[in-house]
Image 1 (cartoon, rainbow, N blue to C red):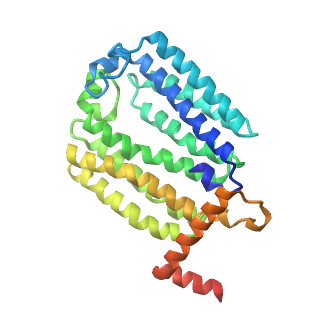
Image 2: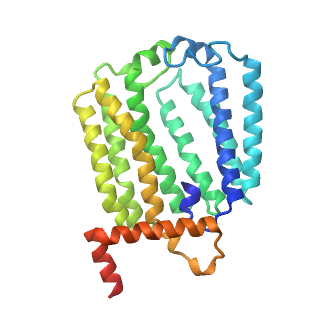
Image 3: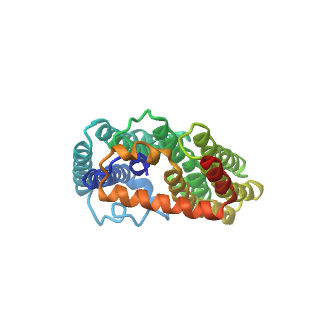
Length: 306
């Protein structure tokens, strides 16, 4: 999402290397995480069938796999961009997830916040690989979106599996929240924070105002689902929050890319590749389709013509 949101010339090689490098770094982080948590995973129903607890693979093999995927992923990221920041972020995310996050899971409820930072980094990597800076406002908005989204997503999951997490000895809010008050408050609070992203993005002129309008519908539904769990802390309502989060994130990122103003910048000054041209044509077609059917877009289009 970060790479495509940049709106600049799209190199298929750079995009491929960035995606593969990011995936390999994520694989490395997950491998080391599971390597350090073999005994805890063996106690939990949802993780006891993983290869390490089941002794399908040895710790030595897992260690080799983690090193190999981490090194190859970082190498690909280094090749994907002239900016070594991308590779540094990839390697740093491995250390943060397999290191601090894994260390905190059985020790502090703050582990989820550290994990949310890990999840916020990939779109920043994509934006940077496409030629931007990690400190660009677009990059910060994308990272913030991923950071905020993870709390309704993971706390709903934590609530559904709170007994299992307790069995594994992990320090999750849901494990110390018999009535669900704290869990519901966090889910509701971060759902509200997340709903502000389209308005902030439009106010900062990163996206068109249509992103804010469409965000009302998307976030309105997400807030209703979060409110249901807030009112009744059942596993069923938690599952609705979790399932909603699965389609909510790609929908929001798609709208961000669609309404990003980076696609409107210097289009006549760039030698576009076939991929960028195809994406730009698709975005223009979708926008035109919306203008023909949406009162808000019709009004704005009419004002622009005047």
